[in-house]
Length: 485
Image (cartoon, rainbow, N blue to C red):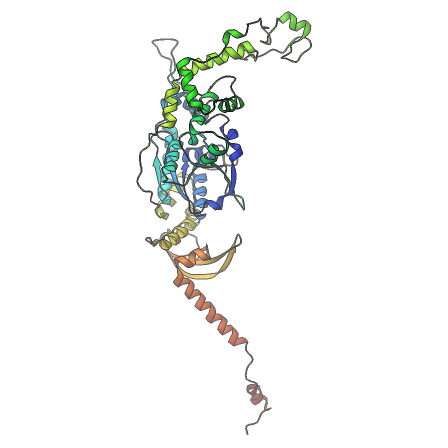
C-alpha cells in the first residue's frame, strides 16, 4: 500500500530519465516488490514455473549488462504496527488460513500475525539464485524499504529501486520506479528528496504526518474525510511549523473537531440520507439526484452530510490516538538497521546455476548455459578492466568478426569454456560464441584485439597482392611478344 496518494502528491517533481543514464551506479533493490510484480503478470500466470525467479534472473541480466550494480534487500521482521496490513496481504497472496474455533470462548478475537513465513520461503529461493549469480544481498532489520533508504542515506548506494513510497519517509534520497527493460530506449521515473523539499516544500516530517492523516501500512484508515488537498492546504497554513509538530500539538490538546456544531437531523432508512422516507417518496432526494423515491444503499454506506462527516472525523482522530501514532513516527524516523560490510560482487557460477534452474524453473541445461554465459563474459571483462581475478571458467580464443548491436560497435568472440556439462549442445568442442562491445573487450583483452588486427592487416595485404596486376613481361614472354635482346 505505502502512503495513500503519495505518488500523486510528489508527481510534479518526477523526472523521466534514460535507464542507461544509471550506468556505473550502485542501486539497492526492494526484492519483495519485484516478487509481487512477477506474481501478477498475466502473461506468465499458469505458463511459467516460478515466475518470480524468471523475472529476477532477466532483470539482473539486463541491468548488469547496462553497467548497473545491484544490491538486493530482503524483508526482516515486520513491525507489530503492520499486523492488520500483513494479515490482508497474506490472505490475498495465499488465501485465508482457517483456524479451528477456540473451545474456551465462542467469541474470540483473532490475533493477527506479522510473520512472513510463506513469503520468506519465496525470498530465500531468490537469495539462492543471487548467490549462483554472484550478486550481493542483505537482510533488513525490519522493512526492506527502510533498509534501502538507510543504505541510500548513508551513501552506501546511489539510490533505491522500489515502488513503495515509504522509502522517502525512511530517509531515502533518490528513488527509481516504473522501469522496463523490454523497450529499445528504456526509461525510468526518478524522484529526488531534494526536489520534494525545495519545490514542493514538503519535509520528511511533513511526509510522515501526511501518512498518518491520509493512511499508510501502519494506519490504513487515516482520517476519514481528509484528502490530499486538505492536508496540503493545512501545511501551507502552518507558517513554518511542520505537520508533525502540529500533530503532536493535537496529541497534547486534543483535536478541534466541532462535533456539536452541526445539528443532527432525521435520516431516511432506505438511502441513509438526510430527510424522511415519506418526504423522499414525494419530493425525491437531493443526494440521490431523484425526483421521486430514492436509491437504496448498502448497510455500510456512510452519509456525506455535515453531521456524519464531523462525527466520523472525530472518531478517526480517536482511532489514531488509539493506534499509538508516536510509535508510527518512531518507526519512520528512527532507523533499526545497522552498518553493513562492504558489498562484494562475485562471479557467476555455471554449474550451480544450471542445477538450480533445472530444479526450480525446469530450464534445460543448454538454455541456462546460453543465458548465463552472457553474464559470465561481461563479469570477466569488468574484472579484468578493474584488475581483479579473471574467470577460470572461460577464456577468449579469438575474434571472429566485427558486429553491430543496437547501433554499438561489437565483436563476435570465440571463447574456450571449462564450465559446461559434457552433454551441452553448443557448437564446437569446448567453444562458445558471444557478442561483446568492442570498446569494453579492447580494454579487457588488448592483446587479443592486437592479434586480431594484425591478422586482419596481413589478410588484407595478401588480398591486395593477389589482386595486383602481374609483370607485363611475364605475359610477353609467354606469348612471344617480347624477345630477349
